[in-house]
Image (cartoon, rainbow, N blue to C red; front, side, top):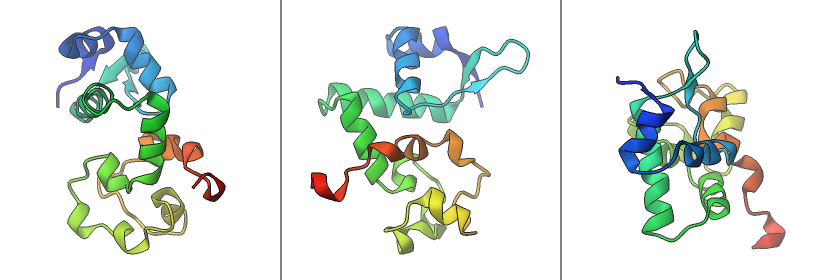
Length: 133
């Protein structure tokens, strides 16, 4: 797994580092921090998420708020491109968000991912309310 600093990650996609920070502030991206320098470091999964965000913005014409709503409503295994989708207990309980199921003892993420690093968790406040539908 290659780790890239913010400049290298941004350059890969031809965008500015400031844009990545914007995605982070929107709750769509959660890079790790280097323990020594506190610099943001982007793993392969982060790079895939950036690619997906850029696709939604440029090809599908979504805005950041629209992506936040999309991520809040989509199943977590779709947001995170989960490799364990076939064995995931979440699809059987789709009415309860994955982060709430985890609090009830249902373990969805086999890779020890914490909810705080998941875009679905961070976009939870952007879900459509029943009155908005």
